[in-house]
Amino acid sequence: MSNKTIIKPLNAISDKGLNLFKEGYTIDEQAEQPDAVILRSYNMHDMTFPASLKAIGRAGAGVNNIPLDVCTEKGIPVFNTPGANANAVKELVITSLIAASRQMFDGVAWAKTLIGQGDDIPKLVETGKKQFVGKEIQGKTLGVIGLGAIGARVANDALELGMDVIGYDPFISVDMAWKLSRSVKRVHNIDELFKEVDYISIHVPLIPETKGLLNKEAFGKMKDNVYILNFSRGELVNDDDIAMALEDGTVGKYITDFPNKKTLEMTNAISIPHLGASSEESEENCAMMAAEELMEYLETGNVRNSVNFPDASLPYQGHPRVTAFHQNVPKMVSKITAEVSDANLNIVDMTNRSYKDHAYTIIDLEGDISETDFNALVGRLDAIEGMITTRVIK
Image 1 (tube, rainbow, N blue to C red):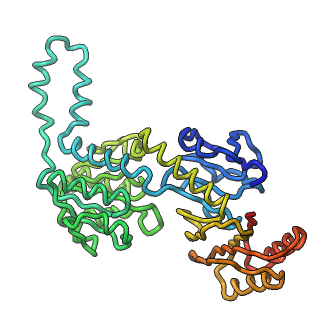
Image 2 (image 1 turned 60 degrees about the vertical axis):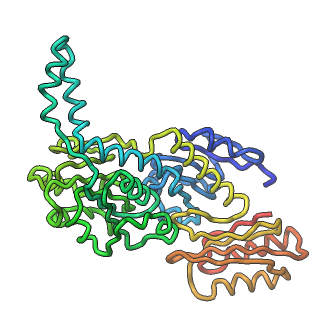
Image 3 (image 1 turned 90 degrees about the vertical axis):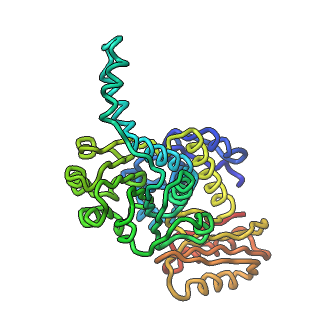
């Protein structure tokens, strides 16, 4: 890259991530025409995208704050950082599982009410502690819905703490399957999990198919007094239905990392102020991973961990490289290669990957061609019907 590539942080981003952008990059929070933005929770839905924007890096897993349809329409890949905050979330899930079972949240809140009681406090504690008798998790059964980077860790650690674990994930990846303990009992019907477990921890993305996954119908299939932990997305649990389940004792406790007006008013609901990924290490890991993904794309065109582009990569050997994001329609690749051939250029290497209605093509070229003719080639590629955007990397 001959000119400085401008990276614009939209949130406070860990220096460990920003410091990875060294020679050839400029970090500018006020930039009006950045090449890429890096963010955490900043809401981009009302943002006007500058014409210069080539990529977006989300330092975290969720991308609800980013208008993916607009990004796809403009040919802008959105990268996230799956697994970078997994340990932080896992630790808080396990902490909350134990603390809720031992009634620690309620007990600590009650102890605060003793302020001002002076020398009577020890006696009051001994008398009052009986209302906070809890239960141990050893020997109980935990159901984990979603066995990805976080869910698999929760399942494995719960086993180490003496729990029986049942897992449900019809889309578990091969990598996660290898990392999951063989002692986790996997079921292929979520109803089997509902009827057997004492605790449920949910770890799935929020998509139309999972919104309200835990609802009145699901609660009706569970044991009475089940504890439910939600450290994924608030909307995975139907607020009205779980409020009713808490009232009638179907659900014993609801621990959520996504407080709202309803959860704060629920009986036996524990609202944690979205602390799942709020650790120094997690923020550093997410920032570093997002920075690395952005640099790889900007410098080589390779795509890794995008939520709207297919993963695609070629080893970068220094040849002139053209990347193309286009509709996934028949004959598109042949139209691209025909234009390259007409320019008397040889294709050294190429790859094409598709994702839903779109595809991404990377082509490495060699041959004698002037700058003017090369630009003309790119113009002809841009003119192909179904082409969304092209980039040239030299």
